[in-house]
Image (cartoon, rainbow, N blue to C red; front, side):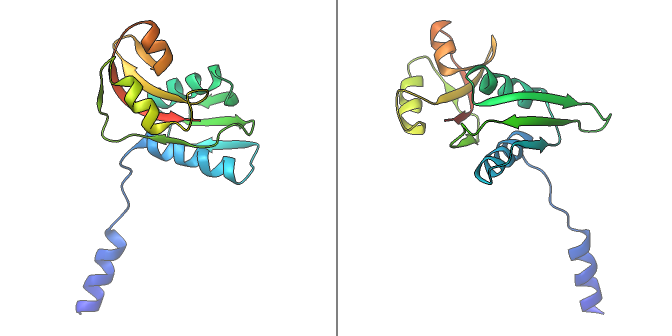
Length: 144
């Protein structure tokens, strides 16, 4: 009787998705490592789309297409083989204008390439754009 109860509890326990952005970036990373040409990311969110737009602006990914299926949504991303690593920083720490330099040196391999993505009151942008607009915000993640 106890075995049946334990088995039903195990079957009932489902994995919950903690961070949609973290899952998306992990999927992107794994597909890039496997040498895929395109990858399907699901579910989709506005934050993921803005993050992908930042990556696209800097030439790390090709075109991407948003598929609205009236559920979570999906995104198909064309990979061009430029991503070495992308990740999310959780929790979303506050990033003052002065602290941006410290975070970039901790996260990125070099000053020449790579970007820290942050969400500000002016929208989601990379650290260089935030410095130009002289605004701070919260850190979302990085890619290089």
